[in-house]
Image (cartoon, rainbow, N blue to C red; front, top):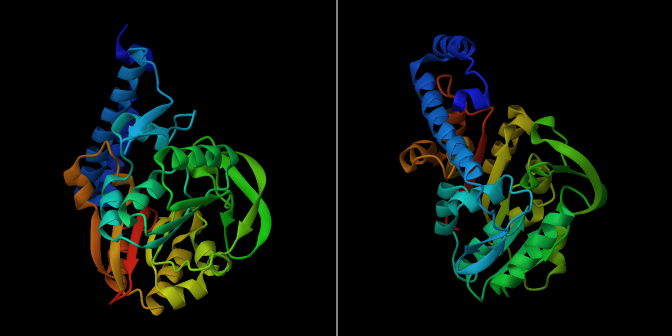
Length: 325
């Protein structure tokens, strides 16, 4: 049986019509990028099909930083990437490491199963501290075990969601474990909700004596502006380096733009934007590098709103540092 027969007939004319409309409406450069992205994506699907055909035993853990690292049993999202490639968001990981220093104090909001907390734990060293937060119960249990297995004594983790006020709220869990959110959005494949404790960054920092945040990382699937709203005192007093995954599809561009202008007004004048759909471990390094930009926030806003290649509906990584910090 051919692959076409296995997977169903390829909808040639439908795809051709869609491609023609894309070329006409968005121009050859956008069309070329779409073709390149699709070729890489099809390679990923081929790798997954090949693994399935071989009936390979799927491990529940991998080796990460020389230690056993447990994956989520769904093997979806982040866990699948780590299983297949051993890395997640390669460019963002590299740029994050460039901005971490020994003795940093890190707030990690949306710690998931521990990938970014352990990346940071190595970089900040034994004199650094990291507080990580993950409200999804099954994910949190894996996070705790991975931190313990790694022997990361500079990391503490808590089962809290982080938002704009202290309360209990509905947290929407997803088929993809790293897509859980306080924001309900059908594109995040939410399939159930639970009640969780929500805390504010400002309150947490006051509760932990001697913790002086130099870094704030978050990946909260649309809850970014709520986290920032509850961190205004920390942003003013400590001026932490920010590493934020921005989910424009959930927030809307006007809200995202207003948030970026607010950060600019706090003194975060320049940074880096990474288009998330290209920062994939199955994408070529050259293409990952081409889809990120550096500059002032005003320049980055112009780039994101560029008529010829807009990012206003994209998910993107944002890394911001105040001058002199």
